[in-house]
Amino acid sequence: MTKVNTFIKMNSKLLDTVDDHWLFSEFSEYVEELMGENWHIPTNVELLEGVPQSAKNAVYAWSFHCTASSHGDITTNLFNNDTITDENLLTNLKMMQEVGCYELAERYESALKLASLDKNFIKLNHEQEKYYNLITSEKYDNFKAIDSDLSFFINEDFSCKVANYIRRHKEELFEL
Image (tube, rainbow, N blue to C red; front, side, top):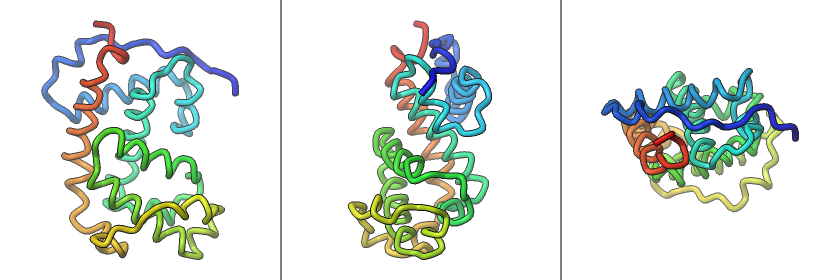
């Protein structure tokens, strides 16, 4: 894998903002700019030389947030996106857990497990065996329950938790 650019810490002035969504979006867009042409964000962020995991997680979170908030749910993305890979889906789940979005991660893990059992999901070239170890939560045992009242978890709550995650990792992400 050829590295395309080098990760450069961001100016710390952004940390002064109290608007969580602004911090989340501006930092993610900054990293996207470092990547250059970013048509496939989860792959290209891996190509940034010296990028810390916390920056990768912020970019994964932004990519997920943009897709999920535009649809208003999780399941539309799983069944109507033939460009997302199994690795991207599983990376999103890991990112949610690392960022501390446990409720959203529980819903997402259930969605992935349920989707892996659906022939329409498998038709999108997903490998069912990659999802065997995932668990379907009793609370979220169907897609309607997973997507119910989801807007809070993919908007306000998610932005707040990712922004706080970015702040906790400021030493590796910002010039202080």
